[in-house]
Each structure stands twice: as C-alpha cells, then as structure tokens.
Image (cartoon, rainbow, N blue to C red; front, side, top):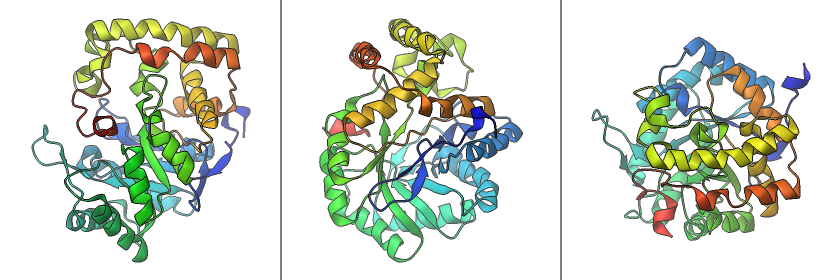
Length: 339
C-alpha cells in the first residue's frame, strides 16, 4: 500500500460504540443533489475508501428516496464485517419532489427501519439516526421506539442529527446515544453553542456532515448559480450564490494561504481544522466528507495526518463569523432554530 493509501487511525464512536476510522464517507451525493453520477466510478470510490481505513459509511432513506441505500447494498454485502453502516429515518419523501416532511412517531420509525433493512439487504443497521427531530412528537417516545429496535437486534447503536444540547441530554437519558450528526465546518459553527458541550459531557461522538461546506471550502466553485449544474441543489443555498457567494469566496484566501504553507489543499486544511477543533472541546469526532471520486478520498484521508499550528488556527478562527447567508433556505428543522 502506498503512502497515499496509508490506513487512517481508528477511534471509538461514542462511549461503547463501534470502533471506526477517524474519517467516514458521506454517500448522499452518489444518488442525489450534486448532478449525475458515474456509478462505476462511485463503486470504485467506496472500495478506495475502505482500503484507506474508512469504515463508517453514511446514508439515509431520504437520499434518492431509498436509491442510495439500494446502491450501497452490494458493497455492504461484500464487506459486511469490515464496515460500520449508518442510515437514518425522519425526513419523509413522497412523489412530490418538492415535499420534505419530518416524522418521528413510533409507528413510522418501525416502518422506516424495516424498509431500510430491505433496501440495504442486511439483517442489522450498525448506527441508526433520527435524521431530523419533530418537536411535536415527544423525544422520549421517538428514542423509546428506537431503543426497541436495539432490543430486537435490528439496530446496534443509536444516533441523532441536528439536535440541541438539551435534546441530546434528554434522548441520552432514555437510551445511550453513540453519535450526533450535525453540520460543522469552518463555515458552520452553531453546533458549538450547546450540542458540542453536551456531546463532550456525555461521551457522544460528533459526526460532522458537510465539513467542506458542501464543497465551497475546497474552492471548487465561486458561485453556484454559474459554476454548477442546473440540478445541483447548491444553486438554491443562500451562501453559494450572488453577493453572498462573492463575500464568502474572499474568506477562502485565508485557507489557501495556510494550505500553501503545508503543500496541502484547501479541503485538507478544512478537514484538519475540524479534527483539531474537536480536540479543543475534548470531543471524539468522525467527519464524513462526501465524494464520488477515488482521488478525493485519497486527498481527504491525507488530511488526518495534517497538523495546523496554533497561529494558523487563530487565523482561521474568525471565518465563521463573517460568512454571509444561512446554511439552508429554510432553517426551521435545524437545531439552530430550536436554541
């Protein structure tokens, strides 16, 4: 194995959770949101990730309305004992492409897990997340139903996504939570207000999604409206078009300067920042950058061996406070809306 494919270190995913590579792979973009996918290349990417020591593979029933889970099924079957399989319920999709509902009621949870098990062609899900929390359903009811799945042997560990620190504590009191998945990057730090301290206190691992700011932190595009495909969902994200995009593009210069000093990429600096920021909080972290390309996997895992200096971390500290635009056009289902 070459240096570029040196296996990454491992870490326990939450107290009593599975041992996984310190970086995972977000699989959403294989099936939806980022334009067309070369499926052969995407399957090669999954194999490359595993070769590098990535063992946490993240999907959800909402991604492609089940298509992402079905795509992963052959890979899961071929490597079942080597990987930690994470999927999610809670975002309801229908035939209406514009509809995104949130459901957390126990009956829906029981239906959702059975459907995911069928699509993934597996007997057990290693890590089962509540994708979004519906405040109209008592959290104890939802987590209680999830705990029943553990007792039944259908799920091994539980996770939550986009919850506040108070909600994490409430859920953890019902059943141990192994992981919290929320957006965390140089561009998005609202999770640090209450969720990060709670996770550190409870021994819950944080699994940051979009640690590369949906690709913006890589410098791959400057304005989604002109640089990305018509069906790329980022064309509708507030941060990535118009005046917001121009404002945010200026912030990338700080990252590029630091990257050049290390002979690294901007993406590697952004990923290294997440790892080191977690250390400040005494928190276990497993970022899940998404990609469909083998070369990007190799680039991303190399970031686990990059160490930023205290001075460089200080230079990066102000970036999030200068970002223009919200994370989503509608922030109502995020943890930030409930804090």
